[in-house]
Image 1 (cartoon, rainbow, N blue to C red):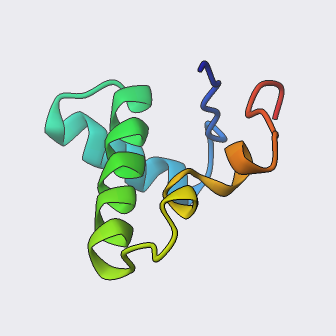
Image 2 (image 1 turned 180 degrees about the horizontal axis):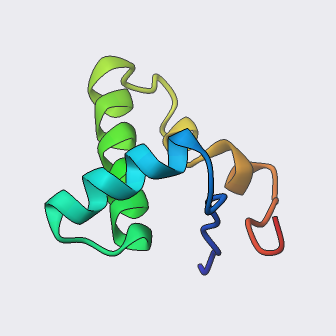
Length: 69
C-alpha cells in the first residue's frame, strides 16, 4: 500500500510540528508517520475491536485510497 502525506507548509500548526520534528531529528514525513503510528497504537489499546475486521482502517475497509488526497 502506498500513500502520500501532505501537511500545509505554513501556519502555526506547521510551525509547531516542524519544531518538534526538528527537535527529534526527524524529517517532517517521518515525524507525521510516527504520529500516525502512535495514535493508532493508543486507539488499539483503548478500544480493542470486538470484530477482527474492524482492526483494519476504515478507509481500507471502504475501498478508499489515500493517493491524490
